[in-house]
Length: 118
Image 1 (cartoon, rainbow, N blue to C red):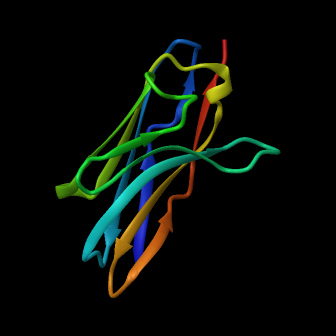
Image 2: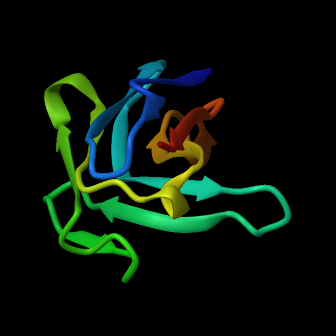
């Protein structure tokens, strides 16, 4: 069994910053891609950023230049540094990881709320 535990969400004013963390734990053999997705009420879940095990990154156009994804492979942890936050960044942010135990599977965190409001 694998768990993804997120932390770092909260409320911030426009222009502010937050840093999300997500740690994978359990019977892990290897972690491949990790990433962050977000969902707002009435919308589909959308990709925010992903990072491969060798550090190749991909970002949604809406967050390029403002968000930075990184990871610590030794800790099976992925981070999302969010700067210059906008009200439209308000959403529940979910961590995702592709993890090998006895086989490869997709895992999701429980979600963490980010609210950007003045």
